[in-house]
Image (tube, rainbow, N blue to C red):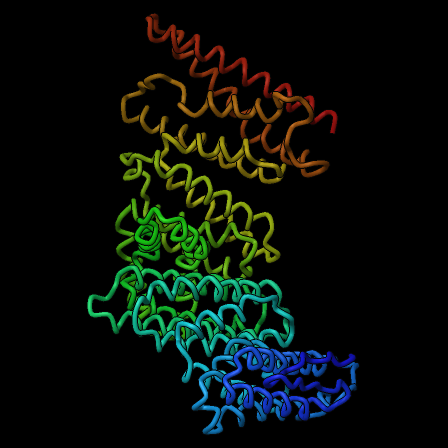
Length: 597
């Protein structure tokens, strides 16, 4: 790559030009000398020009050294990048430079980004670049450096070296945050959006070979959290808004770490979650609040209380906080056997027991897991452990009797969304074991819905199904419910000395309507059932196990009611006639379809 000619620096009225053919190190020394002379003479314009020249030289050298097939200039020599960085560090360390605030301010404005880019090169470049950034942080205004570093971070990530350069900038930013003495929240609200943008980009663009550098990036993000935690500790009244920010930031990072497909990051997740757990505890979050999502809701509400537009925009940067809450529980449960954190495991166990003993909290916890199961961002291993946790939450106890006395209305939309999330795992998981586990979870969660509203949930799932195989599975669940209700009705009949009451199971008429709706779609076209041999097998099963057994049941009920004359029995017979009409029509449709297969 051809060298870019740097800008001319001037001292007084005498311009100094630099030859493009000169080695980078020689040109850099000339520019540093020009900066020193300009600052000594008090010429701020010349100092600014010289500082931009220095920045151009370092930036161009970083580009050249990153080009594998470019052998031009000495920037491609091993150690050339380190040599340039040491030249800058030596200049900054001179007593004359330290005492010259003009030179320091001029360089601090323009050097962090090119220094970090050079620091991403091989050898000891990173250590020297980190020393330069530390010098700026220690000797310049923290508020100024915060803005400068955020501006350097708010740039496109150029892989692969971009990861390492951003790690250097994040480490420097963490040091700056520890030096902030007042107006903490204001400064944190400037820094975190930029930090989270970098993290999100890293997760979405990194591939397997970037794994170790990505781990360094998450560790650097953890250092940002450490700095905010120190801010919280230093405040006498422990500002709750700042604690809420730290908690949401931790949850956002947990979600971003979990989205990574790099094995290096996934293997390091245990330590990341453990570190974040400490942030969450210090911020007032609990496993009970994470399980149910109540702590996340409270934190977001706390930060959204202001009508200021910037506050609403700031909260948007924590869009994965709910995911992070569910994931923090899933990860802790995954690593509990490995004794990742005895305290975390104990706290989670206590929270699980409390949730299992309260049906409302149990619903809240189960619906929280939809954030993990429905997202395409998280690996299957995490979703599999999420299903394990869901089955533990559901438990083995029969809760239908309790749930029948609960107002289910407010939970219905969330339960429906959770069931759709489970369905997505059933249909898409590559491992048969995970698909089977999802089916068990689907049946378990449906069985927890009050019987009075279970059919509505199943009907909604059927109506929203786009998969014939899934539709058949859901129909089979409806069949099981009809059979279960019929057996319950028979038991009631025996206990009541043969009195059947209304005579017709409540679900029967609704189920038949649903079957006709599927076999004869209102919009026309073929039924939404599995194609070819699978369709024939399903239809045969429906005909043999469901529709045919209903015919004698309906006939028996009709005969028993015809024996008694009365207004109630007449109403039952009239209703039953309609049901039988639908039943026989369903049987005809199925038999016609079987003949055509």
